[in-house]
Amino acid sequence: MVAPANTREQIIDTAYQLMLQRGLNGFSYRDISEPLGIKNAAVHYHFPNKMDLVKALVEENCRVLRTSTAEFMAYGGAARPQLEGLFSYTRKQCQCGRPICMPGALAIDYDELPDDIKQLNDRFIADSSRWLTRVLELGREQKEFSFKGDPRIKALTILATIQGARQMARAAEDENFLDKLFDQIRLDLGITS
Amino acid sequence: MVAPANTREQIIDTAYQLMLQRGLNGFSYRDISEPLGIKNAAVHYHFPNKMDLVKALVEENCRVLRTSTAEFMAYGGAARPQLEGLFSYTRKQCQCGRPICMPGALAIDYDELPDDIKQLNDRFIADSSRWLTRVLELGREQKEFSFKGDPRIKALTILATIQGARQMARAAEDENFLDKLFDQIRLDLGITS
DNA sequence: GACTATACTTACCTGCAAGTAAGTAAAGGA
DNA sequence: TCCTTTACTTACTTGCAGGTAAGTATAGTC
Image 1 (cartoon, rainbow over the protein chains, first blue to last red):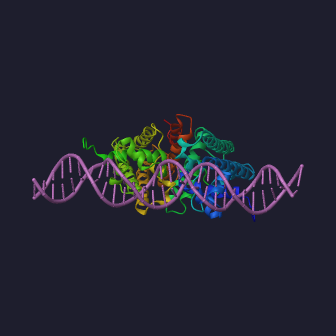
Image 2: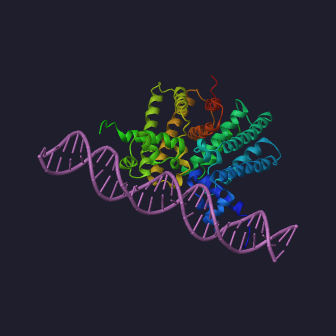
């Protein structure tokens, strides 16, 4: 035993990337252990079965969301910078290997997920949409945004668009694909500047 | 040998459902052969390896697209009915088992796909967006729709929204989730009726 | 009636994925 | 110094996934 160097966290980091790149059935314990220079069973030590691991990944995802939205809100709390925070965060995430988002990665396996993971994923979606709903309400009040309909549905629509766009971006040759769709989302919010 | 009953087509039908429900790595040759009452190797006879099968499924998907859009256009060629055709077609498809769409199912495995399948999938996306672009252009000309920006980007945005929405619908308890997002898409197109 | 192609079945092989049981090395108390 | 806990490794097991090779039944052709 040389450097203890939190193995658990390294496993989560590696698995998190793999999950968003290849999906639940697209990576194995070996794919995690090999690059870390540890044995297969070491991963099982920390996460006895794969669903334990996936649960940790979804929890990690929730943690990332909280950190990010807190950061966006620190931009002064105005609507537009918060929306731009979401866009630039998404763009940044997609620069390396074009990972998709967690709900997108889990969607295909949704029926086989244990209830607790479903609930965590549902909460992630609920939390994201609640945050964005408030941003949209704020933006509409302050006349920064103009759009029709229920802010909650509009928020879910935007999140669905981003989820789909990240997946389409994997096939798109256009390097600026995501940005073009972000532009359209802005236009649909009545943002012209 | 009793009823020849096109086995190949039955395999495609079964695999098509499985693909959109569980994704490429979520089903096996056994999952196809068992319900059809044939042997594993019979599937290999028609599709020597899994990518041969996937290729046939993506081709099937392109065929379905052509049939559907031709049907929507038969509604008289006006923009609004064609858009509604897309919505009702999507709604109908999602009634049983909430399958996601083919590009969504392939997205997670995109990097491992052989080039010919990538190209078929790209063509599917190109064909869909081309069709929707024309519908949007038509609708804008005829003052049925009002939206800002490039119709092609708007079309891609709507397709991304639907792709994401179908995935989110799997987690949503709300039975009318898809319809609510369709309503929002209409609102964003300036449709009020 | 022999020959050929089609559409399978039977009976395998290989490899890997998930998971487990038992052993071990180091660290930290009591 | 012994004991316990933590964090692993070694060395398996099980099962299934994808794939193949060889045999067989039927239909149609010459």
